[in-house]
Length: 498
Image 1 (cartoon, rainbow, N blue to C red):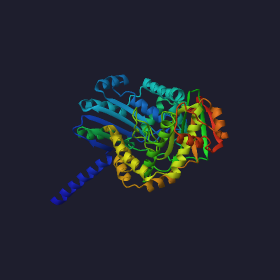
Image 2: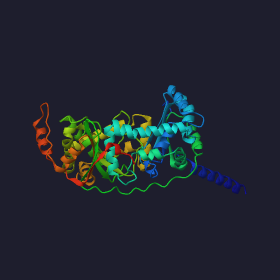
Image 3: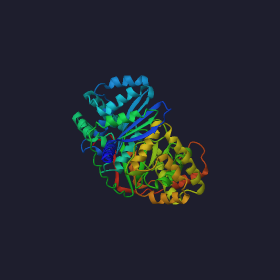
Image 4: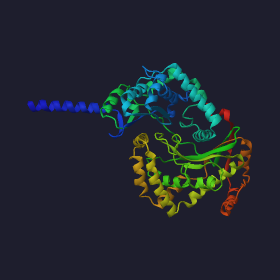
């Protein structure tokens, strides 16, 4: 009898533990007891793909109203005045698939900070004035920043929306002008109730916090309603037929160009890693490691820089590094030609495509491969300079279902051969079917030049090596197979309108 009682007690305790474990939230931890800084990352499985039709921007506006708003007890102004002397910060970033709220604070102020940070997510104030202010900010971003003052971002977003026409990825993450204008505060409140559930949230924390905080957070966030959401199905992007061109006509002093095509791999695929080496050799972001940087800027001085990417790349602030927590189920290869003088826009586009074709034809030599691989293994270690970035990459790895990305880079790259890299180039890259977006003042002239394949000679004010001039003679007549049915001019005032 006594044995049965003991067994029953053990069984009840075990069941209780299982039930408790079943209600636990998803935590990612980097516990460093001696580190006085604390970094939070809270990921909500909600992105621009979840915007209802006609209300594009609802995910962004909901997130912005939360992060740049108040709690039930504190106004937005109260929070900002409290955080400032602590040198603490709360920010939000929204992308296609997820939204991430970040917080950073010294542990001397951790308790008070956590109360504010959790209050924003669990008990948002949803004040009418906060809603209007954030709505105005998002509209200003579309109308004034993208359309008005930032041609580089305008070109990149024109390219993405062009590439993903009639696709869930097909609008700017911030929304559209008409979509944002139609959104009400009630829409935001309803979207919050539907998407901000405990099954839709993953919590990350790093630094020298007391482990009891995990228990507190688990209890607090368990107060959110249960239920996840059905992930939006992603169709294959529309096939590209030859070179398809969108020209955004805007009075400006230089032409910004972005181009590329969808690819069928992400960090979850083995071929991502040899392709990473190839891309670093070809166009590493803001470094002279890349062929594109050397050819367009270093040898010819055409612009500040030209780079390539094998996944969606968002620069982290003023650094040269990628922003963590922008994962996507579908990715793309792209080349970003930073603004060039209008007189050289045709030549710059030709040169970038010419170099892409040569990369596919020739691949890397053994020497180029070894130098680039070693560079990538070492350079990737710099991507986790802060606790927050390290935490972000860990959470990205969990999202993709892989081992920790930074460690995986070294593991994969050290086993690669030059043949692996060149095979990946041939299998995943191509130079024939590409979407091109250009922002320029001479739109009709540029269109005519492209369609007619006019020669695009280039001249220099100083001395240039004969090898550069020899290549220029080839590039100026390099044939661009423009699809005449897929080239159009759009006034900048119509971009991102609906």
